[in-house]
Structures are given as C-alpha cells and as structure tokens.
Image (tube, rainbow, N blue to C red):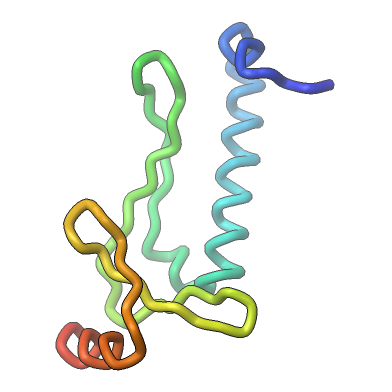
Length: 101
C-alpha cells in the first residue's frame, strides 16, 4: 500500500508515529554511518507542529572534538557560517581545528 501526502492528512496518530519512528531511525542510521556514533550523541531529535504539519526538528550541541563526514573513502569537514554550511579545504580544516579545539 502506498501512502500519499493527502493520506497523511487523514491518517491516524498511530500512522504518523510509525512514519516518525521510521524517519528518526533513518536519520540515526545515516548519522552513525557517515559521521560515527559519537556524532549522534550531540543531536537531539523531536517532532513539532508547524502550520498543521509534523516536522522533525534536529538540534545539535557544540562538539568537543572535530567530526568529519565520510563519503566513500573520502572525509570532509564542514562548518556553519551564518545561515550556510561551508566545506573547508585540508589547510583550512587544520587551522580551524587548531583554533577551535
């Protein structure tokens, strides 16, 4: 059975809870595989209502050590720069880690 967006509006809370658990589990698995389990300990997930829709809110605590993102055999380092996310080069990453940690 396919669940279409219009079905979600008519669905019971049980279905939304099931979908929410599936979404949460997918995010946890993604973070664990790409960033490591230690990264997941810094994230807090919750569902909120936004304009009559359930949204997944992810809040992140400041880390005490650098966290790299794995992409196959490569690792990348990102920082928040205002409302954006920026990838740093190797030398920029070294400088940032030296200053920040």
